[in-house]
Amino acid sequence: MPQFITVERAGAVEIITLNRPEKLNAWHKPMRDELKAAFRSAAESDAVRALVITGAGDRAFSAGQDLEETQKFLSGEQGAAWLDEWRVFYETIRGIEKPFVAALNGVAAGSAFQVTLLCDMRVAHAGVRMGQPEINSGIPSVMGPWMMVERLGLSRAVELTLMGRMMNADECHRIGIIHRLVPQADVMPASLALARELAAKPSIAMRLNKRRFREVTEPAFRAACEAGKRIQGQAYASGEPQRYMAKFFEERRKKRA
Image (tube, rainbow, N blue to C red; front, top):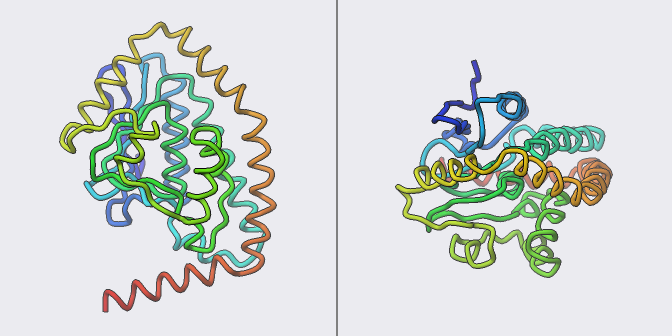
């Protein structure tokens, strides 16, 4: 049984819930391994026609990477291996040829923002914030900028990456990365309704459309993965991410004291 996610079925729709609310659903390797297994199972099941992913609680879809994991890296090799693990994780999502909806119940930051961008459509409420704040933890961004360039254009991708700024729901809706903005209580019902609508579409056309989108974006994805291994290796070899993450944890400890 999964420990860090829950999986349930609503008719032809598989609902996958990130389940570490005490950590704002931040993911570490054990959670990502459970997610990969759930994604692959849903992709292979004839009974599943669409997927919805959400987070437990009402504060966060996911805060992204659990910094307690990456703060422990001692070498550039660990940073490069970490990025390569993300490559496999993202390949698993990109390989799902069924509709995939993100039900955003709260903040989606860093790699969680990236995962939502890999979903086909996103439903959220007015309190949701999304963005790429990795630079504030000393982590260079590679995969996020690639996704943002394709979806938002270079100018906004540069600004969001270098500033580490979080966007509110209104801005995200205005620029097209939130497709449906609904009251908070309606996020999951609206997401399920959207998933069911997509699930009812002709399945072969759906699969071939998604396959073609993957083909179109594959060269840039591969280039980003290769660059990411090199860049994360350099960053973690320098020790800067570890220092900034240690500073973050110390400031949080003082606030709680």
